[in-house]
Length: 362
Ligand code: MRU
Image (tube, rainbow, N blue to C red; front, top):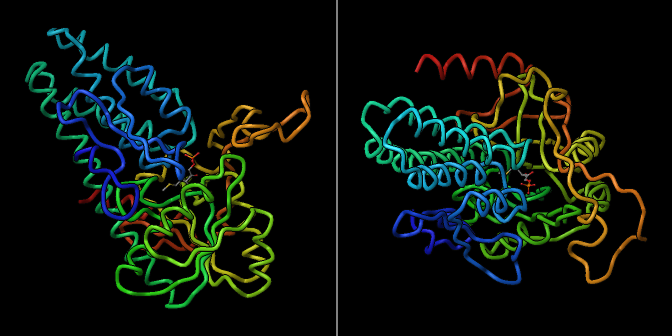
């Protein structure tokens, strides 16, 4: 895991550790596609800011970044007394966890790092640091393997020449390699298959325009960028054979939180009879959330709608804005949930429960 090797598409990780292991290195996704800037995160404030302000974004990438942050912060704790050490590490975890509420991967990765540290407390500070260093690498390696498996399963759902519509960015930048929703397309392209991808620009922060179309172009995949309000037209034209989207948190009944606008795409897909697939690792399923009503939706600043990526304000001063970063797609609109363990189908309460029962047995 070497941050300096990050490329941002297909081949290498976009989150890593500096060569001395003291800082987290990320590609600053807010600078893409204009410039590829590597950022080093050393302080808790820099780490919080990178996650909060989407310099690193996408549910799995946030989780991997948080795990690396926990390792670097653990190294900064000087206490040799392990109760004090754990108290300080837990406080860092709480702070990072408060940066964004919706993607389950953030709290999941922080909890996993804390649990690992707790399990090795008797080995002292040095032992815990060794094991945490290994654990953040494990999380990243597992993500690469999960994306690869998701890509294989997803690829089995489409045929050469199909048109695929995607929303937001669920490619390598949002994960480790391949991505989730873009993974099958990346894998298919590696095997010489051709697809036509329609990328929703994804207002207000334009992850589709800035990141998805960038990644697909880099991978040599035929991509057409559309504004979010054009999805109905490309579907009506018969140009879309499947929709592939990522996920930030999936409830135990299959309700899925993903980037704002996703549920609108799902409603349109249902109307036009187009299969709508959610792709994501099983770690994105939150069994503590019975339905989508239990998922906290992040509300973000008005500036993102009015000005953020524009030279001049795009709305009058003083106008009220509502800016939820995610929405919840009802499970009844979802044709299948593609995980690293296989493709889950309705009734989701049952297929998800079965998946978790099997995982417990292993
Ligand atoms: O606000 P963002 O850019 O972090 O939102 C990202 C998404 O909604 C992605 O679709 C989701 O995290 C899946 S990434 C594999």
